[in-house]
Image (cartoon, one colour):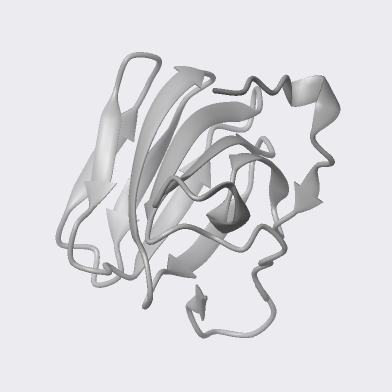
Length: 125
């Protein structure tokens, strides 16, 4: 058994916010848990080719939109969304406040991954 506080974890700048990787591959649990901060007013082109991800919103609001725009979900506190098919997507934070998510990845992240949001491709790891 172990415990870890957010204050004890170094934040990783993932591109358009911060990710506090609370549980990573080296912890041996088989999944990752992050407290993810998405900066207000940002739009991120994301894709996880090697991981499945589920996110639960705890503060702020925004939207997740499929790469082709055919599917869109408003994200508010209490909403969960899952990228169950390695979905390329846009993650859009409301301009008024940062959005805070609890993100779960399977398989687990190493903990140092960062997105490259330059250009018109979907950043992936």
